[in-house]
Image 1 (cartoon, rainbow, N blue to C red):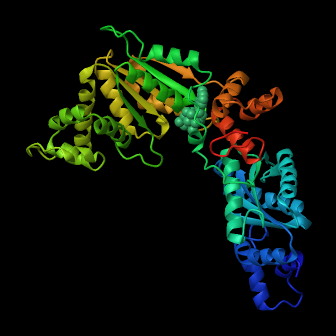
Image 2: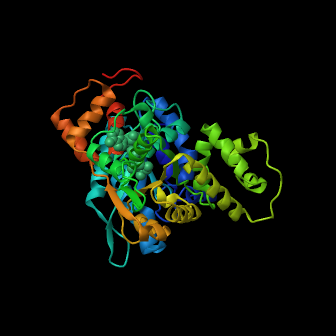
Length: 485
Ligand SMILES: Nc1ncnc2c1ncn2[C@@H]1O[C@H](COP(=O)(O)OP(=O)(O)OP(=O)(O)O)[C@@H](O)[C@H]1O
Ligand SMILES: [Mg+2]
């Protein structure tokens, strides 16, 4: 059987279908869209792949995921979401028609199993689909039509995979990369080597200097660590504001380094996704200096009561390495104990002079930590504590922005402090060229490519890294782990 025949054998139901055939058909069909479903992929694709092997032809699997589907659901309701999925299903079905099998994998994830197609062909084919999707508006009922976007990942058999499982895995990895690299694009699994795990890019591309932010950085330093700390200087709060991947974390870490070089004590708290239990961000942040500074640890340990230490011991195990103070406390609830312990630790950190507190990804930080900072900083001597927050701006309207909810979470500080806004701007072409030079050491990039990189990344450092990763993946730049070509 050719792959087409193998496919056809699983697709049609004979006029005088047996109940087993009818049952199979139902089991392999997605109710909402009428497309094949994930069971079909799982049970029929292996056979199709074996047929392709025998026929010595190539099969590609394109995995697709709608970008921002959840928002449609949340805004217009599930009924509208279903209509959208169903109409999108028709669109895939029409497009893929004779070249392969359209599948609804799950939720807003779709797939196309494309036969007699090698990867470059499949890429062209799916690029065509992406264009079509980008030009279309999809009816969601009640006279409303919405533009939609999708991300697509492609892998091929036998080029990238030895069987169905690996084919599925590889195309899913490519899809993940498409999502990570900015969405609304088609990514193919790379011919050589593995995809770089998204998020680890800076370990592959360490850019030693922060590029293009000199002025902004000196301004930020001026408002935090360089500021004159006279007796009645007003408290200042700096907000580092920008979109995803614009360099907020990087800037705050550089700030921290500068502060430490000046002899300031620092703590760096950050949001812990899906973990907002009381004080979790602050406890984690203070554990770092305690782990690194034996003197500080000893000094603070004697100030903590037995119960306070007990509360922190699971998060800061090093506290348990010191002899325990004599038990003395009245029983108190956990939050009170942690509150008191944190107060003592921060006073301990202040013992030598100034302290810089950095709160990154403030929208993910638990409310108790923010409340604590609000009271502690606004009630202590303003000349001794510098404060900088990383704030992720939200593009979409509707929900309260991260900035206004932060301001609401620190009411005392917001009222009595000077607020300095440090807004991260897109990098220009010169900075991008500089980043590439820093990464590669020698590869020169043409003015045209540079412009393309600047436009496609929007000057966002994270996307520049992502695009470079793509360039490697497509063989435009070669990197063998040590050398660039
Ligand atoms: N000016 C810069 N020069 C060189 N590399 C940079 C610069 N800004 C950011 N980067 C790099 O770009 C990547 C993304 O930056 P970073 O993680 O700081 O962004 P972010 O704004 O904190 O994003 P998120 O909202 O995802 O937390 C990092 O690898 C960082 O080292
Ligand atoms: Mg960050």
